[in-house]
Image (cartoon, rainbow, N blue to C red; front, side):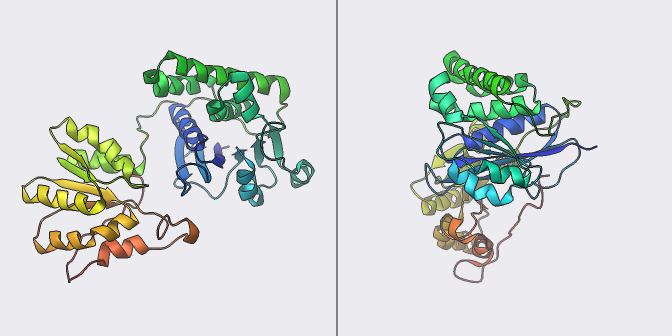
Length: 346
């Protein structure tokens, strides 16, 4: 029987929810599994509802799936948002029975056929590890211990991620893993049917997200100037691309706004250099006049629009095609643009 498992971490932005998903994704990939992830960031700089969902399988998978098997709820909001999606055969791991900010209706969940595990992530992080910041590591290690992931794979990823921050940081995360493992072994009786079968043959693959793929493509295509103003969710295009083009004698410019970044790449293009910027919906709006200037002067430029869900942050009004219309038709005059959108990961 094919193995197909989806783990969803959900909680407050700033608690390491996204990192937990990233670590789990990398671990699953290193074990030889096909992996597809989905992340949702809150509008707030810190706080707000965030999620990271990881689907893994021993078969080819083409989407994030239509739900989850395991929900790791970091707080009450995450539980309430996902409660309607819980049902027979699903697993809930929640931050309890003490130290968290909520308590689910265990009787109701039992009637629904939900497998429930209480792991006091916050309490263990504060009292056993001595660092609340390790709450997400305790969550991950609990998932690994419960569902049969080799813990060494997680430790290897911790070393890769945190070695540059020093041995103390690595050891702190190792301590969090040990605390979680001991808690699961001593207090949790496994009652669900899910288990990772074990390592598969290694595959020659890379783990890449959309913005990183754009950056790699731009570097290979010979982009020598990248100018941009930071804006979610486009900022990481520049984060990935900057070190690549600096190595080739390229130039990176963090401008004071989206308008000046567009002007900078037009100037670079005028000088005969391949140039690119990256932005999102509000930035595209600000760039319209200069996009028209590039068209009128017939200067080739590349503008990456990493779409939000809708206007502003887009969160109140999911979803629409405003960015597409702005990219294709926005501006003054009858200029034409080439608009390309990715169809799939490849």
